[in-house]
Amino acid sequence: MKQQAILQIIACLLILASSHYIVSKVCGQTENPEQQNKHTQNSQVSSEAPKTLPPSFYENYKNAKVSLLIRDITSLPGGEVFLGGSYHGGGNTIHSVLLVSRDEGHTWKDTGLKFPGCSIMNFQTVGRNHVWAISTFTQEGCRGPESLLHSSDAGHNWSSVPMDFETMGGLEWIQQFEFFDDRHGLLIMTRDAGICRIHTTFDGGKSWKTLMTSHLNNMSEVIEPTCPSNCTQKFKEATLWKKQTEYNYYKISDWIRVQIWDINNDPYIVLESQGVDRKGWTQISQIPRYYKVEKDHIVPIENNKTPGTRGDLD
Image 1 (tube, rainbow, N blue to C red):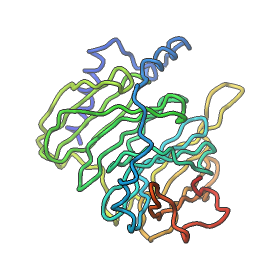
Image 2: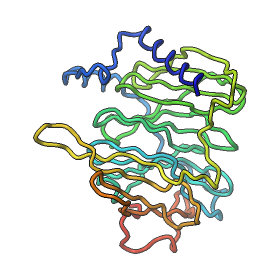
Image 3: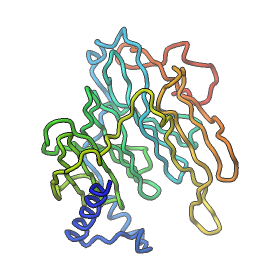
């Protein structure tokens, strides 16, 4: 992984060299409210994220058994937890799904963001309100980014911008995605032929600039972020915080994890939490795994639901 680490260092140096940006969390500095508000306005993307698809879109999936696949999880200090993934049916990715909880994972709602053939993953968060995710095309082995999602109000409203990068050919996937504050971000893309390309943004993801393209000598140093059906990585985790009123800061209180790979054909996707001062994971909610198509939307199948179970989608 040495070559990959070198590329990341070079990318950070290029970002610093091409702007007046100083990483405040490294320097221990904080911004005043006027600066924070200015940055928030600059990071807005004008286009709204799609929430509807034509009824004809679902015609090919009317008789298919649809499953929900969760690929990523993240959280914000206010108790918001986000799950990203997609619905699958008939051997294809139908469209993306983004679920949000505002009570630390006990209940869930679907945001309704629908990108055909895509999955939502690669979450990034900054501060108390900013969260990003990438809508990635996940058909036939592809992992290329399609759109960048961004919310500046803790997931109440979402906007999107197409990620129209010049294609490198072949299969592409995201090697690294990171935001340093609400304006400055880094994206490293890798191609199966051994080409690595580094992009950066200075406006919260509204636009991207290609910093450099590199040819990797050893593709064994690059690991594609996919996992087979027998993968041992069954869970992904996120952090939960509690506000410390006396000192006006947030302290880690719990961890939350989601079951991302269905190994035992479980009818539910289970979410569990574990406190920093207690051992063992405790189930806090569950989300139906199997669905069907009704007219122009996807609903859980009847034997997938237990009346009164916390976590059923509203």
